[in-house]
Length: 113
Image 1: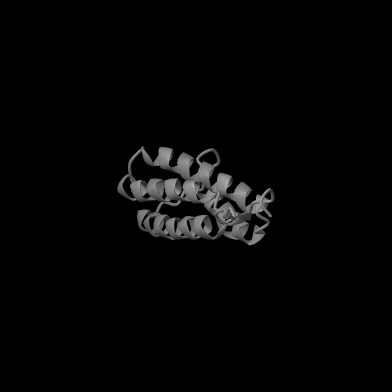
Image 2: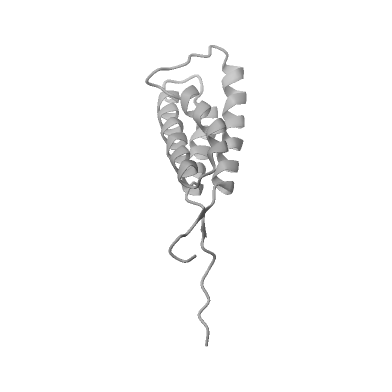
């Protein structure tokens, strides 16, 4: 009898991407509220976590999309965009970027290879 193992591919960035998408969709509702600061913290931190996973997976091209998200949503050194409509559009674009990155950043498990 032969043992079969599941795929040795891992999507480490998937969980942070789902959390970021949830935070971004909540941010759509509170975009003009003070609670948007919490959304900015969450999205910025999760984008940086996903950037580390992209770096570890040697898929550096995702940094082109993830680092600007981390910079725009950074609450420590904020980039203030006074147009709520632009923030609204950016929320949806960032949600799509984060979800795509979470699905496509794949790491091969070296222990099983």
